[in-house]
Length: 322
Image 1 (cartoon, rainbow, N blue to C red):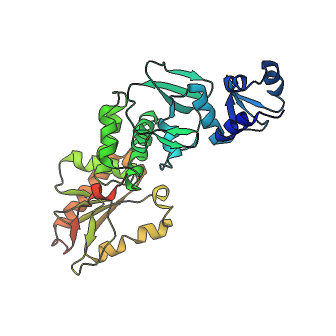
Image 2 (image 1 turned 135 degrees about the horizontal axis):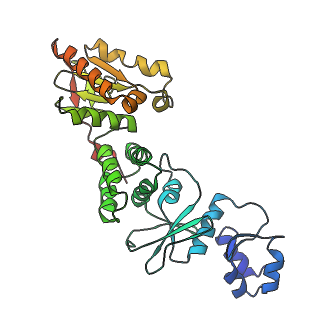
Image 3 (image 1 turned 90 degrees about the vertical axis):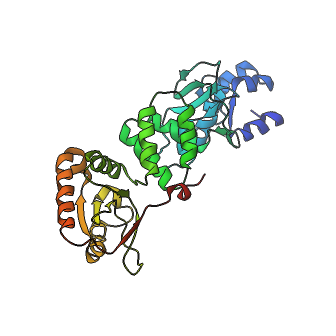
């Protein structure tokens, strides 16, 4: 059927998705809506219709979720994080939506709707989509993550990629409700210290918790006596000039192949630096042996003069931007 001009214009602005109420208000008879749905149109959610028979795109699903949740709703959590392109956030169901109190939280098919009293954020508007701001989306997505490692990876990656500012993330962490607060505070604290991956964060936790090593830095800027840059160690114990490196195919293969990743340690050794390499598997399964290896490396490094290298902590607050 030919849609009235004003309805066709509305459907276009909503990317081909409309509500049953919008059709009725435009003068489309209920019998016609029933006849078209399942033939030329497709029902996406109760009261939400796609004006074509094919499968909806992901963006059309997002519009449908907002139409089902109401005009004051916005995309949130993992859905908003994926829309913002945050690393390690994927487009998966359910679609997460927030609505302001006094509305109630509920599940409508593949849409998860959560009521909130935190409504003072500046939403991002793109066409028919209303989306949570990036730092709040990150915090909520990390709280929704399947486990602590996934939450930490999400936050660390977002900070390292300069997609959020630490102080913005801390703001939303401070004002949100308490569920997931411990995992979020841990993730933000590790991101703020410059750790680039979950294995590095776990290694830092093992080393620092031992209380055996002073002046531990994460990913410092390292230069030799002539001011030439050296490979950045994952962790650096400054009193003796000891570099700790996490060697992992999974976490390094995107930038370098495995052999090249290991070979980059050679410039550290050429500068007289003691290097201890560990794997994520060892960090996870045998932390006591990892700590023993670090202690042995520290003892070896202490038996020779400290190499003439300078380690400077990175200014992480200036590296991340909104």
